[in-house]
Length: 98
Length: 216
Image (cartoon, rainbow over all chains, first blue to last red; front, side, top):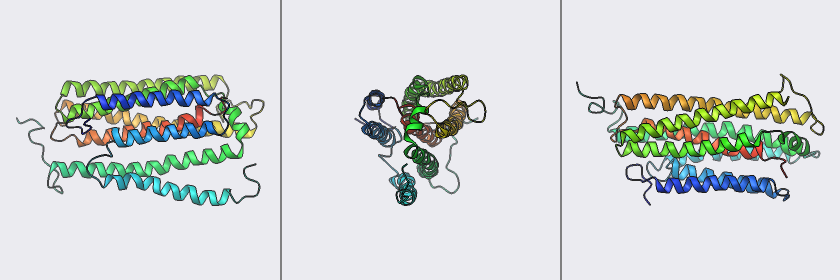
């Protein structure tokens, strides 16, 4: 299926949209299950899958200019530094999490 | 008098319209990288709170209006679809379809804000608005109020971003009416589409963080 704006039909995007809406249903369902820490893990996996779908298909990271991959990845790259350095503090606190 | 489309030429620093369009795309992606850091830091702060006070935050989050958040995630996912269909229509020269999908995108954004406004009204009636009428409920403790501070800051910032997006799509409609968005050059619409979808992505993470906590 073609996804380039010049020649794409609606079908691949409608299929992706249906999948993403279905995944929202999965998130809501798991939120009500007594599965402890697995609930947020599943919910964030769903959010990450939806994000990847939107980034690659709807925001057309697939396709020219290829340099945009670098720009798109930069935010997440620096976010890893922010999370990593912050967690070196929190995870070495004797009283955290309380 | 020649139409705007017929006289469209690249800005002086670009050799072709294609090059101008690719540069615009790269520019919005760099901007979106800064937005990733902005919202990423905000959500990280919330998860530090959540890990520090898991039971109190879960108690407070149960009062978030699940149906409002769920309707809104559906609206935003649908608006990302209508936006990409608008870009396809622009690239393929289907002007009436382009206008239809852009109007649909604006309508979905406005309905989102309407639902959000109603949700804020319900929150006010539930006495969960910090610094206005917050009343601590049993089991919440002080961390419960921190949840609601995050809720209003995060959803408020998201609403500001979405309102900006609605304004930008309306601006695109105006440019379409002037014949400035054509199959030869539709980069401004692509840039607005990228911004719009990013705002959608932010909600994908706010939704489980706010509405699905403490439900089981």
